[in-house]
Image (cartoon, rainbow, N blue to C red; front, side, top):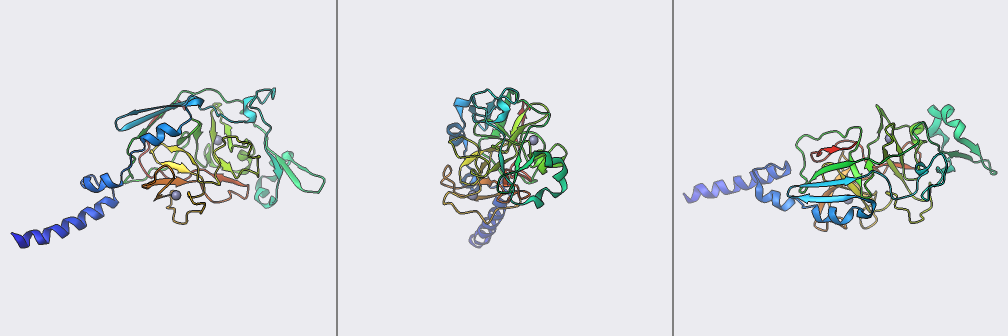
Length: 299
Ligand SMILES: [Zn+2]
Ligand SMILES: [Zn+2]
């Protein structure tokens, strides 16, 4: 009997180690070590003063929001420009017109020259001119878990920023984001879709498109928590807590490491660190979910 156990114990140990990498349910002890309860961070992070609600019920957290931002955007009042949170579309110097080659003809109407001969582009709305109140409700797991088969993000809401505005991926309708679609962004990297649904695709390094005036845009060139995706995993700006840029992100833009909110470590996404099409914008999230996305309504 003694020899029998001496052989079996190491085998079981090896087996449970490899299983834990795949988050197999049979290794309950390992799962308890690596699974993080996100409820207290979710409850304390979302902006209740922007009408976001968080309800923790056992293994499910439900977050509701109107989808309207708490910051400035021209979309508050395109027509009359009178809303207290109205601000003009971003306008800036293009330092690399090569990025606009294919779409130059369509964007040329947005371009002008300044006194020094620089090319200036000023964004403007397309036919989608308003943003309306939605009744968003997103369910995420209290204990996010890695999915065995990673599901691609789809059109529509893939997560909620802390102010309750939906996060979209790098697609605009059926096509990947291009500079023409991006020319309808406000300074927050957002715009409303055909359903008047305001949403973030990207965020810029403040200072390129907007002064850091205390607006709560979901900035990317920092280590701030931006929001949570539908699989329950948090998404951060481009930096780690110590100001460095992560160099070990997986194909879905995330990794397991400590964050300011989760000092014991958690899987989390970061915004892309690629200057998208040389536009100065950084895509918030592309690719697949790390975990299993929960359902949402209202979009
Ligand atoms: Zn869009
Ligand atoms: Zn990180």
